[in-house]
View (cartoon, rainbow, N blue to C red):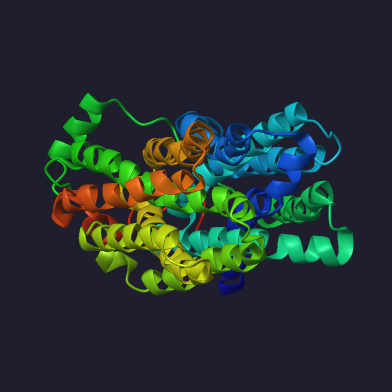
Length: 423
């Protein structure tokens, strides 16, 4: 690849991340309007925000198998088509059933595209996986911040105070543009043959002088642990985004919602960018996850017990800590696995991640409905902080991940996709 080609491909990957999140995170700011107009219960409201997370949890692993069959580039294309269709169609049917149906459709597209990007990072940039994964992570976080922070101001200023359905169109149009750019500019990504059987691979690895003693088994064990820890970080993030607007409305703090949601999401970007420079040395270490758990646990306690005017401060801590967990974890599947296994490993990790994250908004709504106490919506967030501390402390030593040899190994490049060493 030429330098300009590399820049274009990295920009495309970042834009994919942006659009995967802007469509989803544009919903929480207008949730009070949706709840009112469609007469949703708190549980149904929680399910609406948790549905994309649930689809990621259930669909990431099958998406990994599909990527092995038809290739990551085509899967991103299909994912963007589904994302665009779901985002736009839900603006034209004002019923709760259609809203949930099209949210399901766009969530399937998001799952397919998000699972594909680490695979493409491994195929297109095998020597710079950490950087490319961080750029994708930055795109996700910028999209989250834009969707959460700009939806209300744009709606009120240009679309109308109650035009929540039109905001779906607003964030769906950029997906169409991205889809066209992706079809035009994304390089080819040949389909990989499915991974060999464990016995055959173990035999090959055992006879290879460059292979660690038990790389496949250890990477699988650590991906299980990693998936649960990443799920705790995602639970913090999605739980807060799902309930800030509703909680503030119930507590008569609605005036704080736009600022707090914007800060929660924008606070992730400095954290993600800061971690990017040290991702190779921090990957797999215990301390970042423990620190993130302590910070998020203290922040959610402060959120409930301190005056409402401090919400923006606690939002900074919650956003930064969740981004810390996410950024360190997103690059690990392509680093831990060879080209033929990265799709499957990514699917396992994301499924575990979002299985844990799903319970946050939904359980929060159930607790609120059951006990009629608004602060209970944030109890799952506090539990997630505790999980990060415990699982972070139980994380195996960094040497067990076998990352260093993967990071330095640039010999597995695809001859059909030439990439220069200097990115």
